[in-house]
Length: 440
View (cartoon, one colour):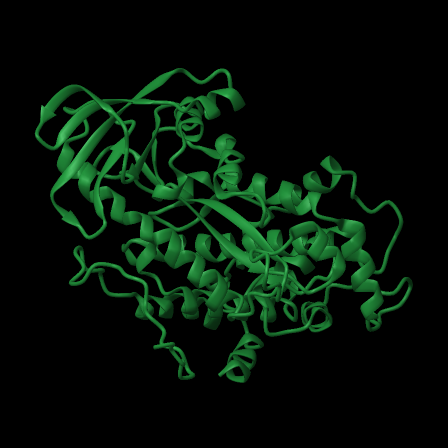
């Protein structure tokens, strides 16, 4: 299939068939700005300058089935030899050295710059509440078992230590599944602490959906203060202490909750109490009995809509699965053996992920469907083909045949999701493979 597409790529190009590659979505000026801002721009003429090293890291996160040397070779990233028309092979040591010179900071800066620039596409539509629906959740990545990674990232389990692990928390738009912000650190840093690093990434007029493990007065009160009209919603935890201030209905209450002395000792600016709105189901949905939220206006935000909006939070869990299983091809152990390289590699994978999602938004607009109904697997195959053919074509234009590939991806539109699950979500029980001997 790929060989046929390569043959089509070399056919004559009609004037009406020019097609901008997804590679053009990442502005060259952003790369230059990120290098200058972090003092990583190449002053000397190198075999692999910093600008191309940035693309190498991004393509590493996209072409997971290839080695770093194969990625560099297939994309023709090395500079032409001075005074000649020949290209020579790049030694693996050159790739390692260029990544170390680049470091993590330019990739983090570039991710932030691009996520701000793509914010309008990421927040493509508002919910029935008149707000952009976002979600926050965490995941972990394995690192190579090196002493440097073990010291920096640590281990989740204190007794069993197979691999060092990195914890990441992301802020995502549920309508497009594009990442608006991420924060990651060693596994000893909790998800609430990482979520607090995302405060500057909160867009205006938004509602962020949290899992119950993020219930923290400091986090949720801070979330309201950043951005204009930014709100939150999270399930009710068992044993919640509160006092009813106003009763809108039997299942819709305005409550006041105390803040623990321990929390106020860590942050003296916290008040003694804080208020929120409590909405509950008449018939609980499994373990979820209701939600508390900062949306206090019962006329503008009806209880029925608040009870149904939370289920959009599963979009971020599905997107993490696509990132790990499809894009990284289930190789959740990152390649780098040094900590800064691990962070650099993860930033590159996240940039590649947003590039894929941005292409899916464009395809969805052409097909007049929601972006979440475009197949992630089909989109990543299209982009991979674009980048491979771009390496052998002049001027960055693809033939008309490849433009048809983008049109053909509309055949991979996924069916609409069911609004209500037949069975509640539950953890799959995996039986033990070996018999157990019990004491009688």
